[in-house]
Image 1 (cartoon, one colour):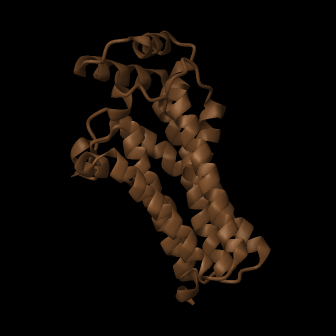
Image 2 (cartoon, rainbow, N blue to C red):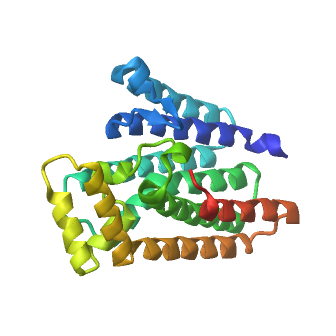
Length: 264
């Protein structure tokens, strides 16, 4: 019954919002989804405390469900999420980051909570261990693809749709996967991008457009899109291992399509 999974759904949503409040503080983002961020409206201390409160409440909500395995799934996901976010911040201070390193970071920062969401539904619904594992893999691969598409939107997304400033990731010189792939491409365009990322001064609008063009020319955008599709193909194969009603299978399959086609 859907009611069995409700504590898990609420807990995941609370953790997600905790992570967004803290993420906006760490990144200095002033807008999210066309609205001022919490720290911008109420100050950094309030945003941090609000995030802490949401995280505590998430654990309390799930503990009320009385399933230690479910609580363990959530706390493990939060630990891995924090480790991934820590790595992401560390990457900003480093001149070189490998593609494999980046993907491990994304596995924690983004995919861990997606994995938790799909695993929790199975655990709270009393599914057999094989189904829990398959749905956890499904969520993980869905999360990895989601992060890669998110990285592309940071370069190619439309601010009016994404709710973030144009080329925000490049402006902050974030090492997202298209950037990392471009920097490792061994091409003249990749070398030019590296020089731009090492500049001390803030990039101009022309600099940002140039960096975006360099990334495109290295083939990094196409690489990122292909890798996202690979994750989604594996996610669908995991879903096929689970005995679920056709309508549920179709709904979860629809999520994989949404990840590829989304523009925000």
